[in-house]
Each structure stands twice: as structure tokens, then as C-alpha cells.
Image (cartoon, rainbow, N blue to C red; front, side, top):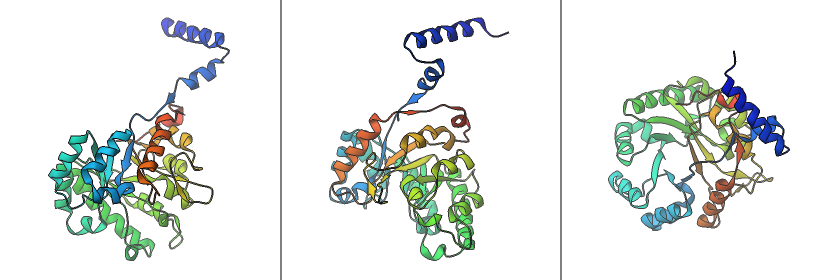
Length: 294
């Protein structure tokens, strides 16, 4: 027998919705309206400023409202100094981009440094051209990533790969991104989806979320205009509401704004932040609850 109190609560909600002229189905949908609770920045966006004034740039990033950052190099600073600089301005750095060569040649030290700074994820953002000429080359890269991911996990970290658009151009009749997803161990290798580059390359983020739920704990939030150029978030054509509505299915935990070549980096990061801060989207439908996120 249905719970009487639950039934009465439903009737009450229906009555309120009716008084407002809003059908019950619409009320149920509206109650799942969501906003991003934290917004991060990939510091590559302000790399020139970081080079000139490391501490001052971090302070300005925090003043905009960002609470998380993702590093793309420490600008010749020791990990202890990086950790201290973050603490002074109230930022955290859940992830960092690290070179392919670091994975191959100095992984143990790289993981040690990442733990000192306080990262949770270590991310490879690029595969050298010579490693990706064939589908078998991508399979060998996947084997390297599996080993790196297993070692990262032993060190208390998570390993991920960040895409560009070349992973969506067929090689030996296969889509490289699909090869990497298929050949890597989900327990060891996750993915940071760059939502601009996947779209630019002809991929569909929502289709990947559905096929590989939970494998995308990190995303790069960067927009594309009608001419396929990179623009501040909210000034392009990428459907952020639809993408973020599927965040549970994708497993997304961290959102990093990025613009590779902004004319005015600080104006760019502020515009993107203000757009995302205001953005509301529907979340919590049946599809969104299918998550393999860790």
C-alpha cells in the first residue's frame, strides 16, 4: 500500500502547482533546476600572466570568483611553493596537465610532486604525432596509459587523458578517441573531455556520455562560434544546458574554463565565469541517474 504521508505530500504539491497555473509535470521538472556549485579555470588561459606574476595572477583568478584551478606547468616553482601560493589566495588545484614525456620517463617523481601540490588528477593533454600515426600506435599509447593509471592509483591519484580534435579524425578506419576508450581500463584511466575540441572534431559529447557513463570526471568548458572559432563561454553555439544536464551520467566533478588565445585573458575569464555563474539547467532526469562516476 502506498505511504499515506507521501501521497498527501504529492497532492499538496499538485495543489500548489495548480494555483500557480503550472501543470504538475512541469513542477516536477522545475524542481531539478541546477547550477554549477564551483567553477574552475585552466591556467593555460592566463599563461603569459602566470609567467610574469605567478602569485598576483592566482590572486586575480580568485578575485573573479574561481575556486579551483588546473595547472599547465609550475613556472619553475617547486611543488611546495605552488601549494603555498594556492593556500594564500584560497584556491585548490584538483588537477594538473603533465607531458607525455613525464609519463614515459619520470612518472614516479611526477606523481610525488602532484601529491605535494594537492592534486587529485594527473592529466596528459597531448599525444606526440609520431605516436598516433596508426590505430596500433593508439593501442600502444593506451597500454602506456593503463600502466600510468595503475601507478597513479597506487599513489592515491587518478589518471586522465585530455583530447583535442585530432582524436576524431579516422586512422586506419577507426576513430582514435574510440580506440583509447576501448583499450584503456576504466579503473585506471579516465578522460577529461575538452568540449570545444570534441565538438570541433565532429564528436558528440552526449553520445560519449551515454556510451561511456562515468568516465569523464573533468571537462574543459570553452565555446565555439558559428565559424568554429574559440570564444568566451556563452558567446558561442555549444549547448551548455544540454551538456550539463547530463553531468551525472558523464560523471563530471570538475569544470575548467579555458580559452587558448584570448585577446584579453582577464576579461575573458571574467566573462566566462559570469555566464556560468548565472547558467541554470535541468538535472536529475532518469538518464542522468545512470552514472559510473567515481
